[in-house]
Length: 394
Ligand code: NAD
Image (cartoon, rainbow, N blue to C red; front, side, top):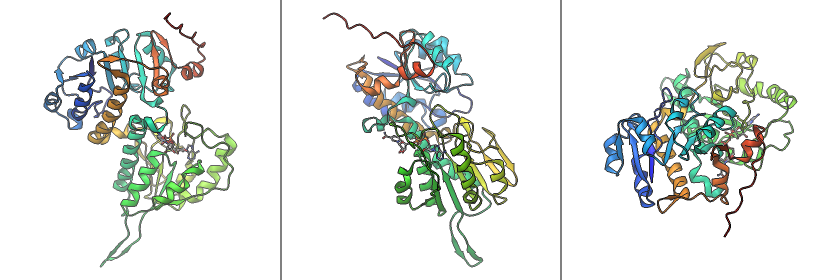
């Protein structure tokens, strides 16, 4: 079987879906890699390194798609909302695609994949169970974004992060507030602490309090009742507008006390909640910085401009898009490990063997045989339930 690695085409994307180090483990189950020339160059993985681990390097992109049984991408059609659709004609029927596909984002892109007869798997739908942790690409990329968000803030802030005692006087440490303590938020806390800042954090899920404290940060508690803060998958649930209004009223004072605010609050399949209003930005000290990691999902701050850095009321607002791509070497290494582990689950003895009894396979499968195969997506996009497949006679 051949696994194809096309070069990423989303503008500015520097990651690559597989790195040379994972190829030997794939070869063991009969998976050979075909890599588009230059696919890893921007991430620090030259063609020669892929070739030395047994990959065939191919100059023509369409040839990579033509010869592959499985295509792996970082940003596939759907997640690549700029030019991802350009790849659709290159796929052939029953070819497997694995990547970020943003299936909760648009019914059209999911239908496009079904229309091409692609057997597609979305890494965003990976269940949050212990066995799937090493395949969890959302967590891996959130780790990268949480880290980098702090570096962006530190680089932009007009202050030091750490406390310094110098001959020129004592420097007080910066105060950093993290709103939303999932994987990205936890990594942001750890990184800001390593740089010496005084860190506090808030989340709707009370379960994170201990994790925040164990990283040496203060957990901000707001006196509002949260209804069913998290769902069975461990994600935050959406709250009603009364909750969000009250949350904003209470957060205003906390935000004004900080030099840096990093927001990461999202709810799957929904627009990100507004946690920071324009009035709250006006209440921050001039020279403060806000990094909005929810920018791609509409932003947690009312004034965020996705993909831009703007100054409003003297506060720098950074709305990064695709931040994981800015640490491409390690982001690719982590993503490649996620994909390789997943591939080892799907391929046995050189053959694709989809065990639909396995929730990892079942929940990540988006399209198959020309249909949207995922029941959760069918329900979300109001498609009629598929008739159960008849068992083949024994
Ligand atoms: P996420 O990216 O979906 O959301 C980021 C954070 O925003 C979450 O902590 C969420 O509670 C918070 N949030 C949402 N609305 C908010 C609001 N109005 N105000 C404040 N905060 C708000 O989250 P994630 O990084 O995917 O992590 C979610 C949870 O799943 C975490 O507890 C994480 O540890 C857990 N997890 C488990 C596994 C596993 O077991 N395999 C894998 C990954 C993550």
